[in-house]
Image 1: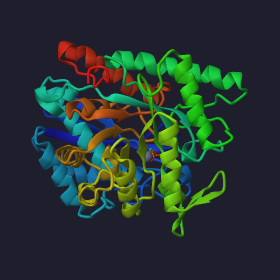
Image 2 (image 1 turned 180 degrees about the vertical axis):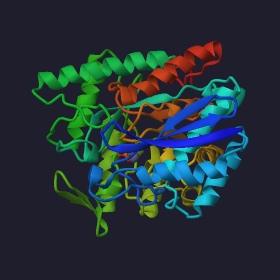
Image 3 (image 1 turned 180 degrees about the horizontal axis):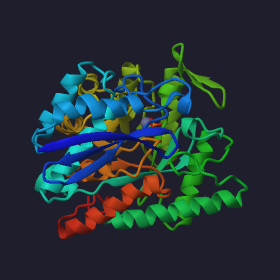
Image 4 (image 1 turned 90 degrees about the vertical axis):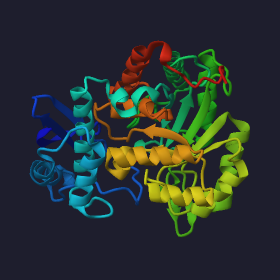
Length: 420
Ligand code: PGA
Ligand code: ZN
C-alpha cells in the first residue's frame, strides 16, 4: 500500500516548469512519473494548473506540487497500489471539478502514472505488461514529425506537423531504421537547397518555405533519396492543428496571411491527398467544427485517416459526440488532455470499440518520461506520435519501444503494410 506521495517542480524540453510525482510504498519501492505540456492546446483540455505571477513567466507549478504533497498525499496514503481505478477516482472526486482545475490535471496525472509504475514494480512486471496483461503485443507505427511549423517553429509554415509513417517495415526496429534514414536524407535535401536545418520543438526541421505544399515535395524527395517508395514503404501524415487558425467563422493562416472558408480548406487538403501520399490528417478543422469534420470524413474518410486531437481532447464525452456525428475515424490520445491514466484508457477502449483508429501522442513540451510507449503497446493502439527521431525528449519513447519489442520477442507484432 501507499506510504507517501510527493511532488517536485522539474522542467520540460522547452525549459518550462512541469510536475514530477514520486510514490513510495510501504515495502520501500518507489516510482516516479512526470507530465508533458502542449503549445497548441485545445480549449477543452483538462486544466494545467500554473502559478501565475512574475516568476517563470507565470508558468511555475508550485501550486500543483503542493496539492500533491498535501491533499493528494492525505487522500491516497494507505490505499492499495493495485487499485488504479480507485486511486484515480479518489483524486477526481477530491478535485470535484469537470476539468480538474482545483488540483490540476498536471498534479493528478503525474500521481496517476507514478502509481501505475509503482504497481508494476510491486508486481515485478514490465510497465506495458502491468497495464495490458498478455494482450499487449502490438508495436505502434511511429508517426515521425520531421518537418515542423505552426506553433512549434518560428518559420513561415502554417501546417504544424509533417510526419512520415514507415508502414513498409516488418518490425518496429526496421521502422526506426527507415525513419532515421529519411530524417537524415531530409537534412541533406534541405542543405543542398540552401534551406535551414535548424529544428523546431519536436525535433523536426523548421525551414522557411514558399508554401506548405513544398514541405510535402521535400518529404517525398527525402523518402525517395533514402531509397524508399513514397506511398508504399513510407507514407505521410499531417497535423494541421487548424484550431489555431479559426477566426470569425473562417480559417486564417497566420504566417502566410491567407484566409479560407471551411469548404476551401477541405478542398485544400483533398488536393494534398490526391497529389501526395498523404494518408492521415489531424485536426483539419477547428475544435468547434464538428460539422466540418463530418463533411471531410464523408468526403475522404474512406481512404484517409481523419484524426481528432483538439476536437476530442482524449475526452470520452467529446469522442462519443464525434462517434454519433461520424466526425472522424481516428483519435489522438494525450493522457494530459484528460488528466488520469484510467480515463485515458477508457477513451482508447471507447475508440477501439467503435472502429476508430488510435494514436498515442506526446506533447510539444516533453520530459524523459516514456509512459506513452508502454501505453501504446499495452492497449495495442497501433500508432504513436512522438516527434522526430532526434532529441532525447522524443527518442527516449522510441528507444523504450525498441526495448519492448525485444522483450516481447516472437510475440511482438508490427502492423506492417507488407503483412496485410
Ligand atoms: P501540442 O501539439 O503538444 O503543442 O498541443 C501537439 C499536437 O497538436 O498534436
Ligand atoms: Zn494535434
